[in-house]
Length: 270
Length: 308
Image 1 (cartoon, rainbow over the protein chains, first blue to last red):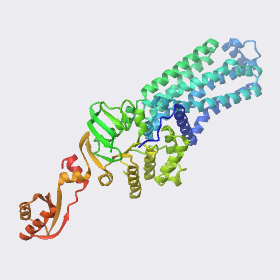
Image 2 (cartoon, chains in turn cyan, green):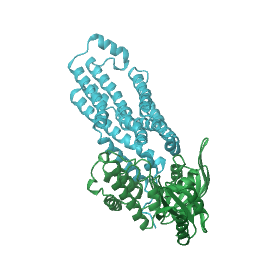
Image 3 (tube, rainbow over the protein chains, first blue to last red):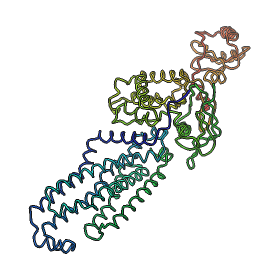
Image 4 (spheres, rainbow over the protein chains, first blue to last red):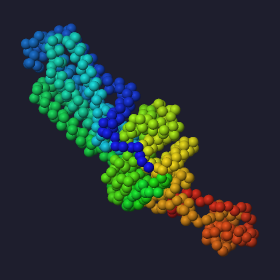
């Protein structure tokens, strides 16, 4: 008597898990809404701020404060400088999108299966833990990256239409384009893998959410430091940060892999 | 019939608790094997061990020809398990649930669709294949979970309480399914509290409490524990002297009172029962009827497992 089962390829497993998770998420309108809302808010706020700066000239007091905070823009036309600075600030906020958008889905990815009692049948399939976590990680990360890139594309188009030359230069700076293309996926994976790590170790959805809120703090901190001029994203720091994030992504994934103990999850979850 | 599952001194400890201890078991290909024991006996832990979901503390096992602990993925590909809870993706349709698991078990998309249709039809759920599982009744969910366990045609299907909470119609569908897959030569490892169901379905049963207490066919267990027993109904009720007289009859190996009857055990009832009737009539007893005493599996279970 033979079985029809074979060992599925990693691609098959990852694709199957991703498609299932996306169907599950898309079936939950509230979740979709709450996932799309933060990027929309940041996007529209960014466009509105650049447009407002284009229409309303800054006061002398504002210009003085701007030159004091950012000596690099001294000498530029005040209106241009303000728009350029605003456009840059919102680009930093775009870096926050991938840490916020996938977090809920990532945190729920394992703990949700625990509470719905779907994890045991899943673990009874011939699937390796690493494959399962990789699939869950990608299922959360891919939509977040796409949402961020789309939002950035819309922002880029809007600033090109509404903003000054300085604002356009800011949002099309190669370093920022690279940041969006490279840093966003790395930040997303870091956020998602931390969410999955939390999800594997915690037995209560509420606790997971509370801990998950802390995940965004370091990234927000980096953003604040950038805005206040304490950290400048030059070429060298860009490369260093990218390498650092890549290492963090791998380390956190491996930690999640180690933390995901089939036996503990099955025997201790009640 | 070959052996499809064998364990040797299989043991599982959780910190201070020993859930399974020195389990020695052999299950044959194509049989329905009943695994019976009280709550907390370690049945679910045993199932998880045999499905390579958790690792044993000590001992060895070979499941579907693969070594536990060394070929766990191959074991998981060769077995199917119905867990205590159906554990289905409730927002997704019945069809999508099964197709997802078919992909995890490495079935090609064509085979996956064929198998999904086959099992949904078998379980009477084909017409509702596009509906979200959340709209299903408890019985339908249970049938879905059984379909999922069988989807990849495993050599052994482990069923943990498959009919618990089901209405009689759904329970019958599940029992018919078990009979059908046995007919296909697959092995069913059935954990159940429903002793009547075990009696009807199982070729052999194991009474289990941390370790196996007894393994045999239901018929052998009955015969061994109770011998051939006959019930003699006495009106209005049997008196002590009736019992004394019956015990003195040649060939009677035992007799006791039970619910207004005398239960008589003997090796050869055809020979002994007429003697008992004559003896009872001789002491003035009114014998209302004589019938074969049906020993239920529950009686056997209580005697073996609970010692009552």
